Amino acid sequence: MEQPVLEPRVILPKVILPKVILPEPFLFPMTKSNYELIETARKIHDNPMDCVINGMEIIGVLPSDLADAFRIVVKNGISDKDTTRLFNYICKIEQGVDIDFNIIHTFKERGVTFLDNYIKLMPVNTAIFLWKQYIDVDSQGLSIIDENGYPKINAHIFIIVKDDSEGILNIDLQMPERTCYLNDQECFDKVLNNDNIITLGILTTDKLFEEDITDQYKTLQYLKDIILTQDQLDRFMENIKEDSDISMDIED
Image 1: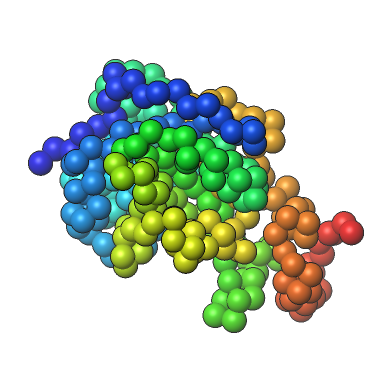
Image 2: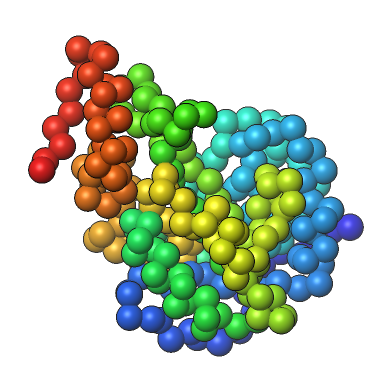
C-alpha cells in the first residue's frame, strides 16, 4: 500500500517558541497510517545504519517500498546535509513544492531545555525529526579514539511524537521495543539525557543560526565545559597520551 507523503496543504497551528530560542522544528502530521508504520515498517532490518531511512518512513516522506530499497544499497548511513537534500528533493518531486529544510545543531543542554518546553506546546498527532551526535564508548564506558586522535563521534536520528493522549512518544525502529514514552524517566535518560550526547539537531525550515554547531573540532573544544566530567576528561587524555604523535589543546 502506498504510504502518504508530506502534505504541504496541511496547516498546523503556529507554536509560540519558549524562552530558549532555537529554530522552530518542522511539524509532520501523524495519521493512523503513520502510527501503523511503527509496527510494519523496516521489513528489511539487517542494516544497522538506517536510522534516517527509518525516520523518513515513519513520517511518510519515504514510501515503505522505497525505504526498503534504500536499506539494501545505503550501508554507511546518510549525513545531515544529504538528509536535508533528500527531504528537499522528495517534497519537490512528490508535491511540486520547494521546501528548504535544514538541520540546526546545538549543544545538548540547550537543546533539551528547548525541547522540554517546546513539546508541551506541540499540537497532538504531530512529529518532529531530531538528530543527535554522541561520543562512542567501549564496553567500559571509555571514549573510543579515532584515527586522528579525537573521540569517535557518531550520529543518530529519532522521532518525537505527541500522540492523541498527549503522551510524548519516542520512535526509534532500531530499538527492540521501537518506542518508549519520554514521560518515563528511563526512556528520557536513554534518549536525551545520556552523558555521551554532545549535540542535538532539529529539522527545520528556518534559516541557519550563527551558533549552528557543525564543525567537529569546534564541538570538541567545548567537551571540557559542556560534556566531559573531570574524570571522563582524565580518562580521555590518558587514552591519547599513548600516541606521541597526537596533540590536542584543551584550554582550562
